[in-house]
Amino acid sequence: VKVIKNNAYFKRFQTRFRRRREGKTDYYQRKRLITQRKNKYNTPKYRMIVRFSNKDVTCQLAYARIEGDVVICAAYAHELPRYGLKVGLTNFSAAYCTGLLLARRILKKLKLDSVYLGVEEADGEENICWDADSDIACVIFETKNKCDIVDQPNAECVLYPYDTTATVTRFCKLKEPSTTTAAPT
Image 1 (spheres, one colour):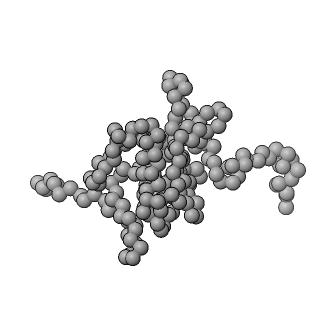
Image 2 (tube, rainbow, N blue to C red; image 1 turned 180 degrees about the vertical axis):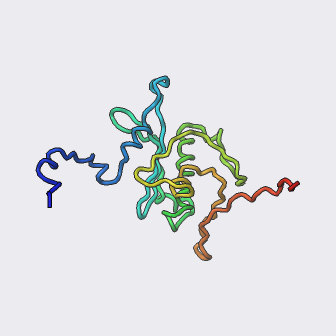
Image 3 (tube, helix red, strand yellow; image 1 turned 30 degrees about the vertical axis):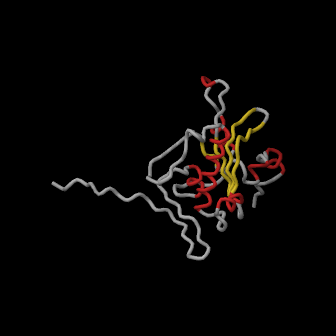
């Protein structure tokens, strides 16, 4: 039996970056997220960083500089009990609320909270006030994933808050299908 991983193999072996070995950074994706077009000069390219741990959801809005990333604003799920969401801080609803909290903080920081008041009654219309790419690290991105709902706190969902005395409802109520369908001819 021939030994494949011999001395010559290990002389040429190149270790991956530390954050890639830890599964924290996908450098292939990061390169495409932070590279800005040349005709936009020094305009920052914003990205929404979403991370999930066992006990928390972290959302940050950041842009890249040569010295390092600059975080403009951040929101965490462990801050949600101040706003009435006391349990289930890592589920679908908490992810949505954390994204919404980040959106309101950014608007307040940029003094645009009086311009974009938000939606009082959920009607399924999209209300986008800024454009940022999703940075979800090494998570496989799928539709209806928790990372997707953090990025779009304005989608077609109505999220119901928790009631600690009753059964917990943590689902999304999608828009009703339209009743105007063409009659078959």
